[in-house]
Amino acid sequence: MATLGIEDFELLLQANSVLSSKLDSAELLQAVMELATRVVKAEASSILLLDEKTNELFFNVALGKAGKQIKEIRLKVGEGLAGWVAENMKAAIVNDVQNDPRWSGKGDRKSDFKTRQVLAVPLITKGRLIGVVEGINKKDGSGFSELDRKALEAFSSQAAVAIENARLFEEVKGEKEKLSTVFAEMTDGALMIDAKGVIQLMNTAAGYFFGIQPQKAIGSVTIQDLIAPFMTVPPLEMIFEHYENTATIELKRREGKAFYLSGVINRLMNNKGEPLGYLFVVHDVTEMRKEELLKRNFLSLISHKLKTPLVTIAGYAPLLLEDSAPLSDFQKKALQTMKSQGMHLSNLVDKLLTFSLIESETLHLNLKPACIRDVIDETLALMKPYIEGHNVVFDKEEHLKNLPLVMIDHERICEVIRNIIENAIKFNDKPEKNIHIFGTRHKDWVRIGIEDNGPGIPPEEHPRIFHKFYQVEDSFTGQVEGAGLGLALTERIVEAHKGAIKVDSLLGRGSVFYFTLPVAPEEDSKS
Ligand code: ADP
Image (spheres, rainbow, N blue to C red):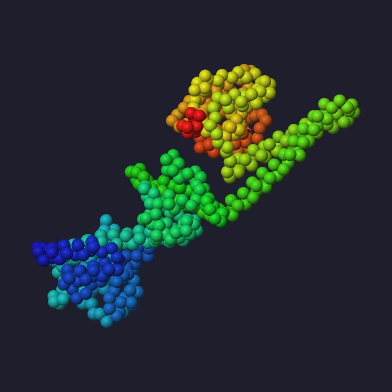
């Protein structure tokens, strides 16, 4: 029985290394044809690939003058000799093609090539047919042998793998190109940084937003340098340290013409869960923010302007009522209405003022070292008329005295404490309302806790109660007066002090509100 010789093996090995070095389809098919010609010592060879959609074989590469016409040839699977090989997934040796009924002669008619002998073998990878390779006319004219068939089959199994790999590679490359085009052309600014913060990818829009050409930024500029001209909320470090996978970010240019960006940051991980970096996608929201600012300023202006005349009306009406001059019943009634409606309107304007304060871009703080226990006492003294109307028992821990001074805006922190205590009373339906106030020091922070024995807040509501206008359904709290602005303002003030506020509470078990304030720097604490 005929077997392959050393020379054949050497050629096959060589073929293997040539094939595995080529990923470009056209180049690879060219190499396959040249090698097939050598393997079976033929005058020429051809490759037909299978178009799975139409179930047709077509010439992907064809050389010479007739190349163009040959490329147009399509053979149905089953049609012609190559079609027979494809259909049966079996090799065929035909040493007299003109007398073989399977021979279609389509290729010869389109070129001036004269085919006499053909050795055709299927190209198969993972049990799937991908085409047919043919050796044409044995060079010495003797005709193809069984040995040639074996050699071409051995070669074609390697060629099939290489062709399939090249096809897959081109598919991936095509997808990558599509993605790159989308990335480059999108109007949102997109950039990717590695775990050290160095920019790895950046599109044109991001380059435009941050004023740098992407090719200059990639590989050398860090995200910190890139966003240095912007104020960011929340600060970037906070996102890197505290956020899980996704965070939203707002950027505002510090100097020059107003420019605002808004976007999302996604943490990138590899499939082992190790951090790869972050993807930033931002868009220009300047027009929107400017409009919001105009609205806020207008609201703030109106409420401030309303406040003064209202204070006058609400202040004079009671004075007139108390005046000794005799008043008719009608006059008394009119003054009483003016007094109560004036107060009502004044409350509304206070809410408007609170709202514009929450919305304001910067909350100006007058920071001074203060003893938190004194601030608490002062707030309770101011709230005396309110507290006296309800049955409240306060329990202030002695330890509050020993806490270090905190660096705060006195008035604003009074407001924070007042809001929390007011809620602890107004939502509490117990005959005796207990309020426990305590504090501890944690590193550079003082943490104050205010606990009540009220109805409690269900856990899913905890993040929402700090949103403006949010109120837990009244079935829980017997919702009373208020506009859902108190805690939003409280959070805004605490965060302006760089502190944090949170609630610990279970339905039916009361609530504890905690907030942190910065310890005053050493020198201030001593003075
Ligand atoms: P407001 O007091 O004007 O309703 P807040 O922003 O102060 O608004 O509070 C938001 C909501 O959170 C309240 O409406 C109430 O439902 C709930 N809440 C706040 N504090 C307490 C508390 N101590 N006990 C129970 N529910 C509370």
